[in-house]
Length: 205
Image (cartoon, rainbow, N blue to C red):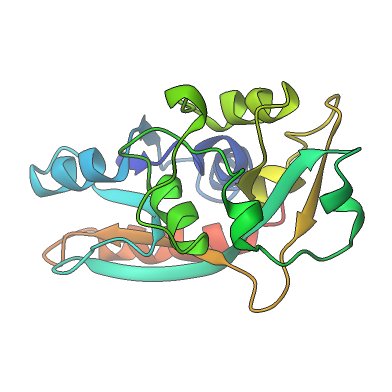
């Protein structure tokens, strides 16, 4: 049994393909999942309650065995009638950045968004922050603002049946790096390397 921790902004989009491929290729290897924020996953790794964690960088992983898997660009989402989204590629100006909605404190995508917007913090609309990507999408659909969404979420169909569209940001496009981490002393290096390979292969699955 592998105990794998995954952050919420990755789990729904990457796990279905991963688990399907693992079932096909390694039917004897069982994976138990724990979805949580990066800080909690790292704490559980340190306490030996998890074997590995799937997180998004940049995040402090010093002292851990860290394998970067692939880049995941951040796309801008907004109402299909928003004039800003008429362009195929968008420059994130300060004026636009002021309209960006955030996930709540503790979610690493919040920190990535703040970095992209070049701000230490953003004044959220009436103090409203989203607890999940689904809530974030609903807030944008309600006309509260715009948001940055991981490409894997956009391509998984999160915006289907909404009035929202997604646009890439102009180069250099902001991105997060998806990584698998483990304790350096892990006795399960073979399973770690297997997961790394399968995650890379199943990314487009």
